[in-house]
Amino acid sequence: MCGILAIIGKGKSPEQVQALSSRMRHRGPDERDLHITEKGHFLSHERLSIVDLHTGKQPIQGSDSAWMVHNGEIYNHQELRDSILKSHQFRTTSDSEVIVHLYEKFGYDFVDMLDGVFAFVVIDGDDFIAGRDPIGVKPLYYGKDSDGAMYFASEMKSLADQCVEFAAFPPGHYYTPKTGFVRYYEPEWFSSENATTALNLDLLRDSLIEATRKRLMADVPLGVLLSGGLDSSLTSSIAARLLEGTGQKLHSFSIGLDPTAPDLIAARKVADFLGTEHHELYFSVQEGIQILDKLVWHLETYDVTSIRASTPMYFLSKAISELGIKVVLSGEGADEIFGGYLYFRNAPDADAFQKETVRRVQRLSTADCLRADKSTMAHGLEARVPFLDKAFLKVAMLTQPHEKEPKTYNGIEKYILRKAFDTPERPFLPDSVLWRQKEQFSDGVGYNWIDELIAYCESQVSDADFALAAEKYPINTPMTKEAFFYREIFHKHYPQEQAALTVKRWIPKWQANTDPSGRANAAHVNADISIAQKKKLEKIVS
Image (cartoon, rainbow, N blue to C red; front, side):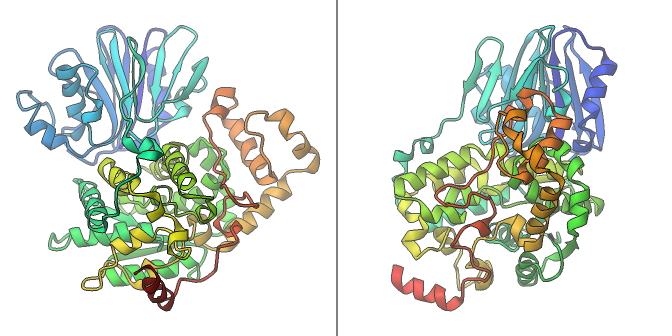
């Protein structure tokens, strides 16, 4: 994982480009480099070395005149090297290098051959191509300055004050000067009516195991973010099982306000069950408030739930990085895929349920993916997300929606995911965790976190200032004093109208209280689902 900056056009000195790239130094603390092409274009790279620690420095030159920079991981790079690129001579053993060779062999028509997460730019003379992974796990922004030069950067902070227009690069697209934006990723599941596949629990389980296996690719120590919820616990369990016999110790990490936080209690159960090297971190509400300004600068969003959830993730990432671990697995995406948020219980019918899952997955780049990437990469830590694997998405998203609806299973969310890993002969998780009700991360660290954060923000915003919210912020007008407080911080760092337009707010549907906390939903209970309830349900669905 890294930070990339490309400028195609004139008007900047090497020193200026390096200064802009340095704004993302946190993304790549290990090494950096700048290449100026023969046509005077710039490629800059801030590297976090994970695969090929010794020869993988970027920018990387292809066989001839093409050069590239890449942020992400290409999980099928060895397969590509051994097959369609076997005649090519490689300069490194890095997973990234296959991108420039695919461009040399296929021109623009190669991006969907990549299995992984990525934001990249390849420059060849005055021609170039930029691309972003299917879901937008990795961030990318693009813009144009007053001289007509085009910019591409991993974070908005490297181009926002340089460009007269800029935006977030759309996931699942590539861009070239000849074609403009082209959608290369348009799977069947984008249309909700295609979700007609019969439920196959074995395939669902095997697909997630394979997605996790790919994401263990690393030449550095790795760990797991373990909140104690279903999703992070499953990825932790799968990783622990895949690493059995390798001699590699799996580190797990959890955070909360104090040892009694709901997530910490559940995470301890999982860590003990799996035998991980477990690390528990605490933070105070006051510490969280103190870093809000820096956090918003890193996140580049004013979305309420992103900021609430990113605060503990930011602290946890710092502690993990200081231990020398560079890669962690995380559970992002499962709630969007399976309708895991409690508001999904209120979907009026299966079609509406399916359309909402599709919409939420398509917008992950503005929500959980953004949060997971930027709060971890603020400390040079890479988060990998098995649930957003292309092959797993195909299996899960095309499954008939009534099989995923909570109402089908007496209100239990993500039932088929739980059931797929309910293997009594060799359990993946304790039943108390496998069947635990959804607890959003920002709630699970301790309920006081959100309650006291809201109170603090309200104390900082006067009624008079809040009354002018619509006038001051006509784009995505903040509806609460908490949202207004975050918007003020964001506006200080990113005052451009285009910056405000990059943000999409996370708002639950089908419930009266639109606060994004899971506790705003009437279905939320402050307890785990019991084993007795599970057994009762088993009788109902059988």
